[in-house]
Amino acid sequence: MLPRRALLEGARHPDVLSALISQAEMVLRTYQPSWSGFLSAPEREEAEARLGELEELQLRSSGGFPQAERRCLEISRMLPAGSAAQDESTAPLQLLALNGNFLFDPADPTSIREALLAAGHSGSALGDVLVRGDRGALLVTSQPLAAQLLEQTLQVRTVSCSFEPADWSQLPAQGPRQKRLTTVEASLRLDAVASAGFGVSRSRMAELIRLGKVRLDWQPVSSPSRELKVGERVQLEGRGELVMESADLTKRERWRLQLTRTL
Image (cartoon, rainbow, N blue to C red):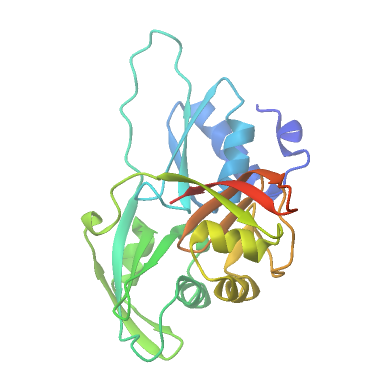
């Protein structure tokens, strides 16, 4: 048995972590690797940090493409040194195209996800949603959910949508890329720093923050005036992540910032 109480102490996502611990215990008993459902980025990061410290377990994740935010976690038993490596299983995922005319009612990942949840589908079966302009979106799903959706239609606000299989080659193939930049700002306000880091006008960034499109360390934030601290991570929906690596006050009392953006 795993040290459940110690693993759960102070956890930010105890229900998710508890289910993964039960899954890991089954893996240890049966010696069979097992994939979880889709986890949000903060859920996965917490699980990897806590379960990854256990010597008897091995973890890896997949979301269908390298930049995926929502990912499934494979838990397997760590083999003794010198043992033959296990064949890596492929995550049981499928890519679907959601087709609809969004010309007059633009699609966004949140509204599509909410429509799927309102239709009774489980969030743990749904990965990332990538919008394709006014044509619809690509959805990474579990294979059982894909089989259901292919026989259904979906209403996303005012738009009636259908589903069809899509090819994985339509998704980004390259892994995450990092870009480092230096900027000088009058303050450490979230809207100012994020505007410089993501290349978005400050007024637009303030609007995105108020709309809930921006998160700090994966937690929602709604105040553009919130001051950033060194090391905090800013996530912008569809634009990657920004980290303020350092902040030094200049002689003119402005802030020289070193930023790292992951795309």
